[in-house]
Image 1 (cartoon, rainbow, N blue to C red):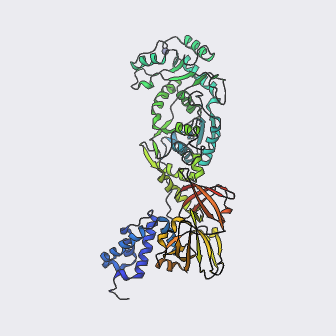
Image 2 (tube, rainbow, N blue to C red):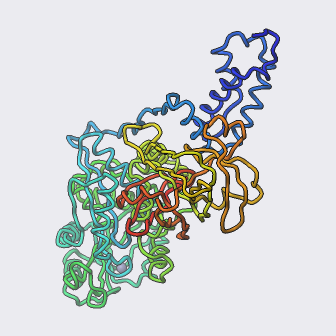
Image 3 (cartoon, protein in one colour):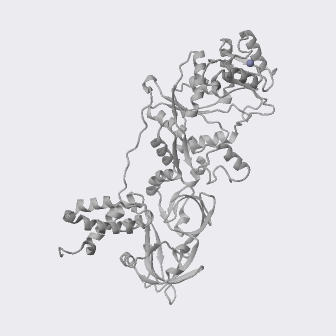
Length: 587
Ligand SMILES: [Zn+2]
């Protein structure tokens, strides 16, 4: 080879650059970095070190060409040409930072305590996963506690107890123990009475606005200092129904000078008219119900919780509960308060979800527009992806904003290797290819990196004098403006488009090899032989429906499998009958 050959004419070198650039692009979400490719080439081909400037210009041009391809197309080329180079990067499993004072306790106990007034959504993922993960990291115990003590305003719903259990199981966060607060009302009575008897709580019959006026100026209400005997009488009047809803509350004594007025003498027990607002589990059995801080505060101690992991919006609650712990001679558990986790574009308002379902705006709890775990599950988000994302964020105290794209990136890392590939064409158009010289036997691997999983096989047998076969192709791949161009039916052969309109198209067999397609700069498209097909619809994440045709092998798929419709996206199979119904997960 002539020494002075310009690098631009050196085809071997250019092919080597193309390979490096493609591998680099696949690694960087479709964008190859010129610098990285230059480094790679001069690292492996020392003879070009003296010609870096010229080399860089060539590389720059190739990188630009490659970056114009979609990530899918880049992967496709790598898979076809250098399957051995397609090595997955393995990232080290990230672990959570150690728990504070874990060694102080013989067993770490954490809890997740939802109100079953709605299904769970991505907003709860942090509390669930961190609590569960820490419990298993320290071989401790993870407790599920249903906080269902408000039958009036945050009304629990029976079906949600079960749905929440299902969600935890799906997330891989099965609890070691489960409690339901509505089963524990007598326990709350016992401690309320204890706090009253010891002078640490009192029954307040003031109108709320009168109480508020006094407490704001750090003054006790007239009930606070009544003798214990009278407090107990009032307590019994609460229990026996002499006081009606709104007429009396038990308050836990705090420092009246606490800088935050919301903490001063907080309410612990109240009356709810359960004849009007029966509890879904215990009906009208109780008319006195604990408020959040009394029930949760007592339970954390009684259930042996050592580490409370929750959002920082609970800091005020901790300050309230610490007074009760002091009154009872208890020590408050370790508390970790993480920052808010927002998911851009995700529906995370319980009330909006519930309202939307009532109004029929959402079909069900697993409507693909929702970020409920039920919807994520139906769409093909994997619990592993959610878990990894949450663990990577960890228990940071500052607010974190994530997007769907972040979750998709985690999910893609899992699905890329686990999901088998199939052909699907959206908005199909029939392409009749004539002049096919012989029978073709197309063997398509279920997964390019896992040939051991097997393949789908389609016999392409030309018919009639014009030796034709008809294929379903995506309308967007067969544009009338492309008449005269060569197109490659992926992993089959190349055709030259002869005619195309909105309803049909015809083409002539051109050649067989991938090389010829490359030389003709042919577009690579998907195809499904007419007759070896299956009508399909994909429910998209905005609940719209994409009609299309899937390849015949999809008849063998089963509900709940996650597959990749190539060049379309990952989908989760919902139903396989005469029609295939799938839910769209992501690109
Ligand atoms: Zn009062």
